[in-house]
Image 1 (cartoon, helix red, strand yellow):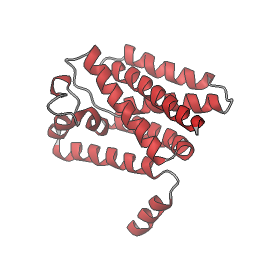
Image 2 (image 1 turned 90 degrees about the horizontal axis):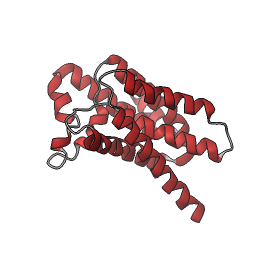
Image 3 (image 1 turned 180 degrees about the horizontal axis):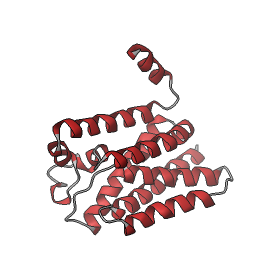
Image 4 (image 1 turned 45 degrees about the vertical axis):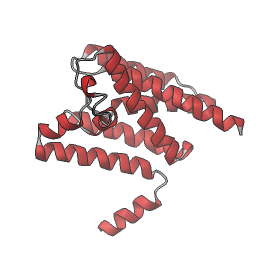
Length: 187
C-alpha cells in the first residue's frame, strides 16, 4: 500500500501540493505529539526575525487546532490542484513561499509583538494567483472576490486571526504572479 501511494504521488500532476500538504500534516502531528515546543520553535515572532529567519516560512507548517489545519489544508488542496497544473510545480512553490514570507513581513510591520502560525498567508497568495489566472482566461472573478472578501473580513471580526498575514500574502501572491506572467509574455 505504501509503495502504491508514493508511486501515485510521483505520477501526480500536482506533486508540490502533495508535498506541502505532507509537511503541514507532519507539522501538525509533531505539535500533537510534542506540544507547544514545536509551535514556539517554528512560529513567526517578529523580534526573532533576524536571528531566526527560517521562521518567516516555518510558521506556515504549524497550526492552532484541528479546524485551522483542516481549513488551510483543504484550501491548499483545492487551489494547488488548479494552480500547480497551470503554472507548474516550481512556480507554484515560489508563489506559495513568497506569499508566506510576505505575510510574515506584513505581520512584522503592522503587528510586531504578535506570534503567528498557519498557512493562511500562502493560501491568500494562491487566491491572488487564481484571480489573475482566471482574469487571463477571461473568466468572471465575482465569486472569487466574494470568497477573498469574506475571508479577509473574518480576520477583522474574529479575534486571534492575523489579518496582516492574510493581506501580506494576498499582496505577495499578486506581485509574484504578475512577475511570472510578465516573464512568460516576454518569451
